[in-house]
Amino acid sequence: MHYTRVIGCGGYLPERVMLNKELEDLVETSDEWIRTRTGIRQRHIAREDETTSEMACNASQQAIDMSGIEPDTIDLIIVATSTPDLIYPSTACLLQKKLGLRNGAAAFDVQAVCSGFIYALSIADQYIRSGAMRRALVIGTDMNSRILDWSDRTTCVLFGDGAGAVILDRSDTPGVYKTLLHADGSYSDYLQVPSGVSCQTAEPFIRMRGNEVFKFAVKAMDEIVDETLAHTGFTKNDIDWLVPHQANLRIITATVKKLGMSMDDVILTVAEHGNTSAASIPLALDVGVRDGRIRQGDIILMEAVGGGFTWGSALLRY
Ligand code: UT7
Image (cartoon, rainbow, N blue to C red; front, side, top):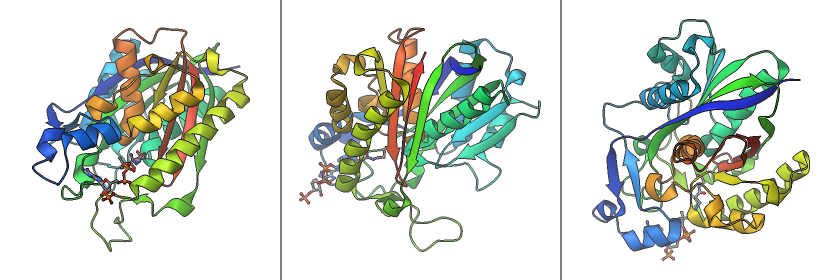
């Protein structure tokens, strides 16, 4: 029986920090509104010459260093992103090139917006569990600043840029107990970037029916907590850490209440990072591990909801 275990993590945030106050000069908003409605105080914004694969590369290097593995033992590279460098090659292939990996590892992107990291983790887990692959590099990386309409106050205050990465390895003991993935495409126009390749009828910026997304997110996260616990036989009390997608502090608070947890049991990055889409969960994991809160053996619940709608969860022992 094989299991999947996280043996290293890493994170990267662009150097430039944009405070809420700066947004007051761009749109009719206030630091107070942003903080109270979302919990966000600042976000990181990439340089003009920076790319999504570069951010992924920085986070990956850290994860590789922490795990102590030889990079050419990686069998599988999955990049979760909605903001790829190019239409193709995939960001995963561009990352593979940047890492100098020429061992023939499979590399591809996954697009499930803010749930992307959970989707990528779940895919890698299936390969490792089945015995088909041994070691995977899984990344969430997004450069949201490139798809923001900086004149739309309902979206531009919410997002940031960044990347987070994990190294997953085959193990005899868990590891990942369960991942759950869901989607409902009938909600596709609630949160979208309504322009792409075959369809270029609108500007390529994030458009969101915020309040409806909010309500859906609270309900979906509420339900997936029960579903995850039912599948694994774990109880709420068994969970040491909630590592949630960081879109809005109020959504996270609702999940924490549902779990009967304390906010001290949550790795919170939303205030400093804003919503970094696919990067937010691995970035939060990295923060929790590096500051010593998350220790080996701890039980972690991850959960996310994003455009699509997509949503999912992962329950694992670190
Ligand atoms: O990561 C993927 C998932 N994404 C999310 O989970 C985001 C989910 N949605 C949210 O986080 C929240 O819905 C928002 C933070 C986006 C908005 O909070 P809300 O409490 O749902 O506010 P609202 O959309 O109902 O808007 C309330 C008011 C509106 O004004 P009126 O119509 O009541 O006069 C908005 O126009 O707040 C106004 N507003 C703002 N005011 C100042 C919207 N954005 C801003 C802003 N600054 N940036």
